[in-house]
Each structure stands twice: as structure tokens, then as C-alpha cells.
Length: 416
Image (tube, rainbow, N blue to C red; front, side, top):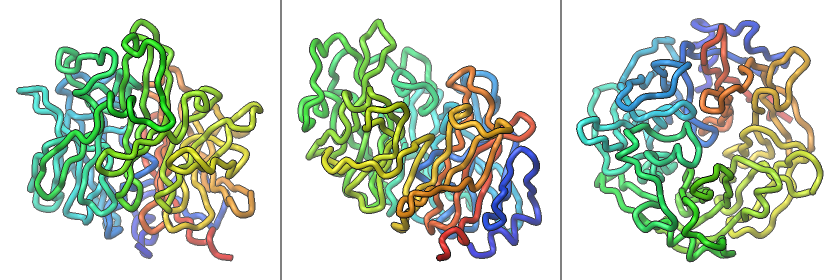
């Protein structure tokens, strides 16, 4: 990894579309032309640090259609060579096919759809030999040790929020009516490939502490939206999302549970969330979560931390935005971005923010061009994410009207 910038700087450059005015943070573009990395909670850099795994959309201007095919891309950091290692129709516009690494470079995961049965499933791919294993379930997030895949119902994901799942014909993804037993959180064991629903939406609703119960629950549609492992693989978080069947107003709460679906706790209630907030993530200790949330009653959101059971909620930094995540090795740094127009700079660019929680200071490690949001399905989110070593940050951006991906080297930012 220490030679990453010496290698890729020979092949890629950064122009006026993404700028870094801090000479201590080298910045390179690693791929362009309709490409994204996945999300702010997993890194596209392989465990060895030699490769980057991305997804290329077939189009940036129309919604994915059932059966439409995109590409899983592998970039060799040493040579700059980019190649297509798989094709998939299991994607939407925000996270692609949820491409991410397992325990080593020989295990790359992505979602796909069997168009003969319209069944969505995860594939384990060896990108060097082409060997594939069809898994029994889908993947939203791989555990850090590579042993388990966690997912919610990606075919119904768009009913909670479009962009994060996989597209199948509507007849194969019926809406949930009230509390259901046949939808919830799913775990796939990598060794066996077998998938199990560990908890249902009804069980989450009935057993959450504090309770998330609402009057006339049968008049709502309930969905799980996103599911994430803590770094230790001992607990999961999910967002439970509900709305009246004939209304688009969403209500949400953050739920955590043990890896087997027991000990269901409400970390952030709907009453807390409705004051303003978004984007929950685990912290390195595996006990606490971070989030953008309005807890001070003033305009705007703060970056907060909270224990998995809803206790010990604190303001970590007074100005929240985008997709915050803590340094994976426990250093007092948070990386985050902003939505297009949320924190615009003088020239209209969007900042990638590095926040020092200990000193309560921040700096922009990069300034990028994000298109104005006119349709939330097609927005471009930077989704800055730490690599596993905590030295590099990967994020999305645009150049010349198309999506691209960058890497920044933050090593000098941590030198005292």
C-alpha cells in the first residue's frame, strides 16, 4: 500500500473537477466513465491493497430496467490496468451491485439477478480465475472477517428508498402490508453458502427496546433499509422504515441486534430522527454508532455518537453533513462529505471534510464537483470511506459530466 500513489499517479491525474489545496494530501483519480465505489462503510481497496473494485453503470440518465446489465470493474493499482471481471443486473443507481471484498483478494462479492426466475442473489467471485459461487442470499455488507453476508430485502428496497437494491419486475417484489413475517434481516454463511432469515420485521417491531410501536400498524408498510455489521461481527444495525400505504411520509428508527437476531434495541427513535438526521454507522469499538442528528434543538444537524441501546448519546462535532465515519483504527478523526448544495464552496464545489474530533477542528482534503440534485435517484454522493489501514480515503465525484472515483492519501494528516 505504501507505493500506491507512486504507482497510480503515473496513470491518472486530477484536474479542475477535483482539487486539493492541501499539499499534504496527495489525490488521484483511479477510474472514470460511469463508475462508482459502493458506500461509506466498506472500502473498494482490496485487503492486500493491490486492487480497487468498482461498478460501472450502463447509463447515468435512466432508471435501471429489470435485466439491464452493468459491469464489475477491477483496477490494478500498480499498473493502472482496468478490466471487467463480471457483469451484473443486480444493481440500482446509488450503490451499484454492492461490490465489496471478502477476507482476501480472491473473494469479491456482488449482487446479480437470475432473469429466468427473477431471483436476486450474491456471487462470490475470484477475479483472477473467474471462478464463481452463487450464494443462497444477497449481500448488503460482508462481515470484516469475511465469514458472513448480511442483507435485507434488496428487491423491495426501492419501496423504502430508491437506489440501494436490485431491480426485478414488480410482480416479483410485492409491497409489504402491515407487519410481516416473511421479510426481515438475512445472513448468509460464506462457508456453506446457505442463507437464513434471522429476524422478521414483525419480530423487530414486537421486541424492540424501547418500543417502536405505532397506532394502527396494519395501515403502514414496514421495511428494513440497510444492514451493517459492527467491526467485531457481533452486532448488526438496520433502519426500520414505515409509512402509510397511501402516503409517502416516512418514519424511521435505528435498530441494533446481536448477530443471531436477538437482543433487539432501539438506538435512535423515530421521535429523535424526525428532528433531522441521516446516515448511521458503527464506530470502531463495535458498541457505539455515529450519525448526523439534530439533538441540540437548533437549526442543522450535529455528528453524534450513541451506544447500541440508545444510551450515552453525545454530540461529537457541532456541524454534521453527508456520510460521516470514524477512523477504523480508533484515531480521533471523522471523514465525511456533503450533499451537492449542502455546504457549497465559493466556486460551487463540495468539500470532503476531515474532522479532528479531539481538537474540534476540520480541513477540506478535497473539493469536488457534484451535480445539482434534481432527481434523488440519480444524485451523485461522494460516500467517502476509509480503507482498512486507515491511511487512504476513497470517494466518488464527477468529471466532464460523468461519475468517477478518487483516492486521497491522508498519512501526513495524522503526524503530530
